[in-house]
Image (spheres, rainbow, N blue to C red):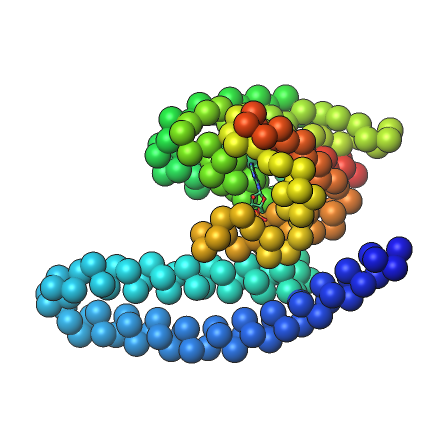
Length: 234
Ligand code: ADP
């Protein structure tokens, strides 16, 4: 219990610092982006000369913005709570696929979709989509040489409470136990510069907040399965 208390105090402190820093960084980035846009329109046809450099600056500024949004979301989740709606989980899963289509095309990924749930769940649609996209992108990262991505939703009770179970499984590299023990820690990543280590900690926070649960099983060299349970909408 003491360990948990220290952990939650640590998280609160990280949250405060992160929110402060993120707000501070957002302002100069907005100025950069604004001036960059003006500069591009002033260059007009001449922009072609520095095409590669312009594209790189544009991409990297977008990346900073993405990281800042994630950081703020992690630090101040209540500001991002948004409103909550009833959903058919299968529909939300389907809507995620176009968002990751470019990644599905890159490697030979076989997608298996099984939609059998009949119960509605309550959750902010954008947040649920964010959780699913996070898990799908992680699954694809784990299968650089291709494999099978399984997406499934089914009716499932937990301790007698009706709900649905969403399965996101990959046949990728899997995780060693010491990695698995830390995946929900904020900022834990094995992806060096490419990763923020925030995807799973934010996802878990969002699911917990809806009274759901988040489980994972993984075998190194065989793959990983994430299970999300959400209660039925009353
Ligand atoms: P990020 O993806 O930015 O690293 P996450 O919080 O989403 O942050 O994931 C944390 C870590 O968990 C990853 O760096 C990776 O080591 C591990 N992980 C997550 N999903 C998978 C998966 N499907 N297969 C193997 N490892 C995974």
